[in-house]
Length: 106
Image 1: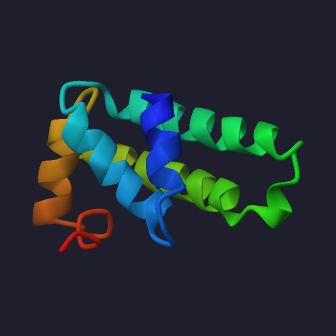
Image 2 (image 1 turned 180 degrees about the vertical axis):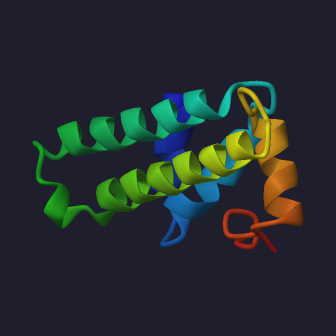
């Protein structure tokens, strides 16, 4: 999953944002927290490739930002009573309530 995330994050200017929904689509049964972990791990791996110089590679900061926004969505779902939201439940939430991650797809 981390390799998939790294590839998606590096795919164009909207990579980190669209990577989130792509992860949820590809692995709909994993927990949302696992998706957060994958994004953070991908950002860390990219940073390591560039010797920790995240300032020169905006993908790192953007991926961490997307992981934070994903965590906020998970919290929103949990406050609505969802326990351990999955990729599938996130996709439903994004389509019905907050299209930030899915609006990037044409």
